[in-house]
Length: 333
Image 1 (tube, helix red, strand yellow):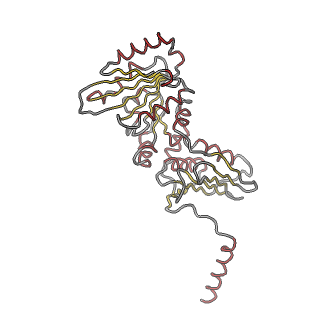
Image 2 (cartoon, one colour):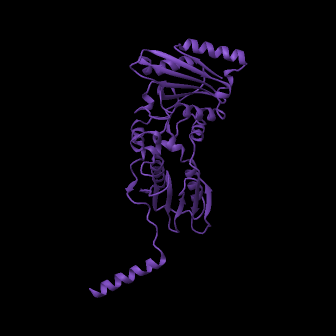
Image 3 (cartoon, helix red, strand yellow):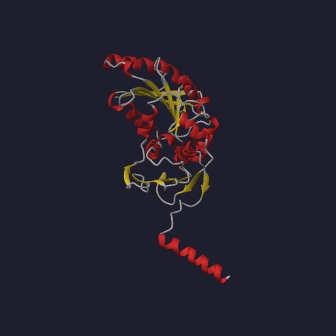
């Protein structure tokens, strides 16, 4: 059910929500948090709402969407309430703010927050320079951004590093969960040798590749080399060198990865690129600061950049020919 409330107030919105609960027999007792989504009017707001609705089936919540409209217009608040099949396991309140009200999102959100429940703020597109200092960010225990959705993802990630505060997180980090799990599991098996070299290959503007390289460098205490992929999407290859041979996880098509390591057969692994819904649901599972993300974020910039993709080892025949050529040259000189 979708109910439009043009030129309304937060008091009228609250009254209508109470009436809907009385008529439908619904209660807020099942809501575990309030999720505030901040967008600009005209952005892909419905896509963000759909992702929140899907995530709400795991985390029932009230979703408040702040869609900021034209600043030059007359002050006006248009609202829309979505319940039932149009809201997943949540209730959605869309606030479209115009004129001076566009800069007063926090004031419009506060009367609609569920009492005694955590607040999570999510900027699915362009985020403020310092989310923890934003008026809506100050209301929230957790603040979720997405560097990959911004015009310059790497610069956005650097801004996250400069403005980090406990409770901040980014979906570029959440997309690494499967990669981190597979690499940690591979290193949990013998031989337990020190990592001597790290190579991460991915798209040039992939913030997840940057975070993965910095995470590996921080915890393996070895500088990571960051290579630009010539094909593939997102992260393509991670190669960890050890004395007994490399551990390599390669995903050329964004769907299936291949894990290879010395003394074991190659394994094919489901490594599908994660959806926004999956990443959002994962972040809503925890409301405490993510210390591992903080370490990875603050280690950004330690990876050595390279223009070409990860070089592949030469074939045996080629490796044998090179010494002969060098020897011949030396003899002739």
